[in-house]
Length: 328
Length: 287
Image (spheres, each protein chain N blue to C red):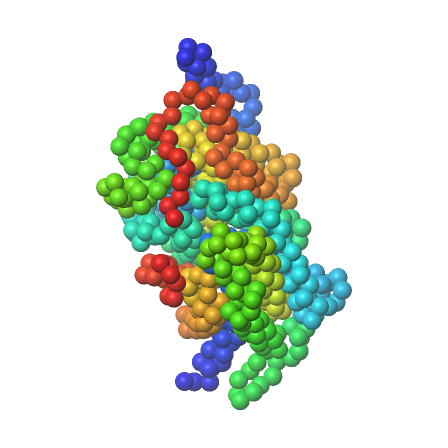
């Protein structure tokens, strides 16, 4: 137990000191920030996709809403982009309710297909919208007007902002995991019919998880905009945005607190490496590798990498793990 | 009804027959083993590239590319079944969805890497020139695609409902264990279903390539068309897919004509969401 505690302390110190350790290298500082940003998105997906077992492949809708809310707040209102974050989160919760009420009734594949269709619908519509800059997209402040614009040359400030948001999100997820809602969500995931018959209002809890997940995905989108300063339909609403969230969570371990972070730690450096070494051609190859990784996880490691750790450490405290079963 | 409108409806029907053909592949697998092939659109895309390659490398038209695409995609389907689907279909939901989704990404970006992002088109007059019949203009390529699509879809329907093989496949989809006790090998039947679905999809792809641009990401849109068709027609019903495919073809060309080409996808997506909303099991599907 003390060794476990010591390991935790060392990890926390390492995470906090990371930008100082790599101070000389902007590339590494940027990589750290990107990993954390991806982990925020994937952890947000994890709430509904991992814990509740509702595999949304359309979370780019919320990511795009967050990014566009931030940029529109700047271009149309002249405010700092980050002021659009709460707007994006509120809007996403609303949109999640509108999408979720009909689609969460669907089980398994049907829900995934519906979320893909909605995301594609939104992407096509956004590229025809004058207000959102059409297919060209919109850019944030070219020159920072003040610290509130959150426009920094160094990646270190982003690192700490993203770290704080991720820590908050993981804390919240941890609280849900340990509380009544986490218990309900696991029950729904294992067998929705059984959960219902025990009096869990499955529909309502799935919707709560979906809305919460949407809010934090939108926050990830707004943060993305502050760092990159630009969004277009493909980088906001594109299907690959959703895919990355799903893959990171699944690789690390969907429905596990640190699963998405582990996935991001592996996949983001991989993507950056292949992009920088293979140039324009690399973008295609990155997703070939992504595809191969997904197939391999699905085939050989459906519970993700963290499940390997679990097997080796059978005494680890696991909250009420029920036997794997299927709803139908 | 004005002549232009008739023209639009006719081209919608011809397009719809091709939609029906590749959707019947999806519905066959779905109905038989309750697995959604998220890579289905990318199977169509590969069928299209087969036609493009056969034209650019050998100068062959649809007479060569249709059989070639059928065999190639059928092989791909059977390989996917044995290497991937067979193992994930009893796993958790996330693994089922991720499995074919990962395959989709692999094929889509593999095609991007191999063929480049540029759109490729076959020559307009590859299948013959357009002609005018009863005041309606027909394009050779679309007529061929529509007629072959209709015939192959009907043949598939007959194969599934009127032959011994079809009965065996139905038996496996109803109850694999019981079928096994009757001396039917479920895995063989399921592999056969993947092969037949692949062949239908490959044929459809090779036909679409004769009148539509071919690009690595074209499967994304086509997959959604197939999802709409299948959910509209009822899961597992090839005849349902035929009717739904024709309806969606007409809806698409009407909305392109009446509202604007950009919105034809939008209308189809909205239709899909509405079907899922009001009738998640499909118009004729089982609960």
